[in-house]
Image (tube, rainbow, N blue to C red; front, top):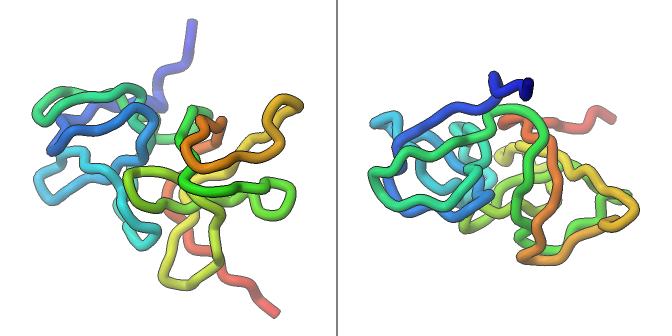
Length: 131
């Protein structure tokens, strides 16, 4: 039996695309995460939906997501949100949050904008380097 404890359902406040990062708004509804500064990013939508529909969201763990730019996990596998609920390499800025990490494999050692990628969604965390 599959473990579904990491999947929640939310009502969509707007149209959401498949595998987009989503945040929770003030009304407790899912919205597309559009910036790495959103600390209310809750997970990754598992299907496309329209406003008012219920959408399944992976709140923690392995899922597919969409790359928003070039990703080279050998250089940086931590990822942050960008526009349209997509993911890009985390830049380490103190005002931004890493929300996932890419899991590369023999068939996909990197990604380009628009590619589906396998990630572990961990939720927002802000890492700063200590020198």
